[in-house]
Image 1: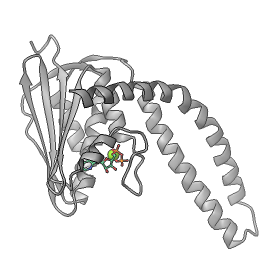
Image 2 (image 1 turned 30 degrees about the horizontal axis):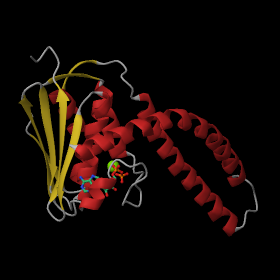
Image 3 (image 1 turned 90 degrees about the horizontal axis):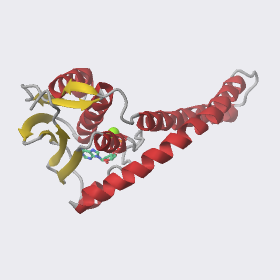
Image 4 (image 1 turned 180 degrees about the vertical axis):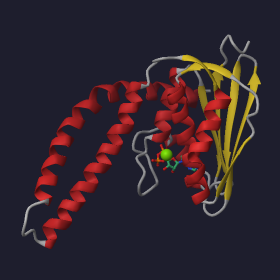
Length: 229
Ligand code: ADP
Ligand code: MG
């Protein structure tokens, strides 16, 4: 599949860049943040100065959020891989995200009821599902459902995460995984890039099917490890 391959290349390059840049940017950010806090405590500030400082602070926070996402991306090279049960990761992540889902009118239906063992890092894979669940929840206006399934297909496990959200156009699907691509006011546009990168590190694949107004399905395939076979 040609599109999937191109995205993998791109994600790899982005990861390398992230590793070298993220740390360097965080240091000056911390310094500026410190000075903004000092200025905020000055007496006799005009209203204009106060609101400017407030804006500076929130924009710095936004920049930090982006850097934090970048750093977790850079760190996600093949570290501490162990044999882990995908079912367990999905269950834990669904539990963590449950309050956020309920708050937004989304029901998460987890149909994964047998173990699937893959080699990987538990917290990285947790990040993948967390990001996909969050995106699903945020794509649903009003009430909706996210359904998770997993099946064994030869040497791989295929996990599907379907939402009944607003869906994406062909153009939007192509931009998925591009850093800073977001359609949300508070978005960082890092979530799917992180997912692609982590799955790529585990020699897996992500495919997306989406229809505007109907919903989106993410299909992740990961190689099963010896314990399973
Ligand atoms: P963010 O969530 O910060 O915007 P992501 O990389 O996670 O960044 O997602 C990028 C964009 O892709 C989102 O802003 C949204 O427009 C689109 N998107 C991602 N997942 C879904 C989904 N399940 N349904 C509809 N659109 C989605
Ligand atoms: Mg997201």
